[in-house]
Image (cartoon, rainbow, N blue to C red):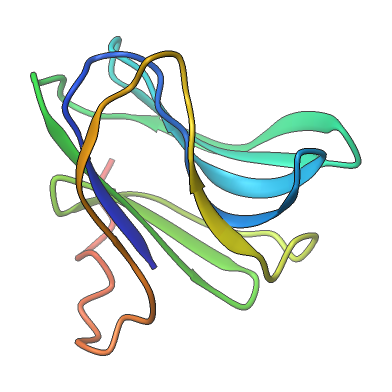
Length: 120
């Protein structure tokens, strides 16, 4: 589980499974209200799943991962739930074009809240 508040409305990937620059899995949001589950595999980036969210000055982004399951809630509302078994382990990372994050948390979700229900 990686949880962070993105406080600047720029692209801000939140990476939950980072192996190296050519192999990782994460959530990418942008200021236009798009959220994507992104996979970089052997240097080739692809979108695993995508959705939209209501834009705001700050948004809480979370990515919950377990095995091949990836769940991305924004502001507590599930936006993406997708399975992909190509990258099932790795570290966490924050990156982007001048993003500003606060309240960053990474670790196991011992509270079992998993970000709420999935809604479109």
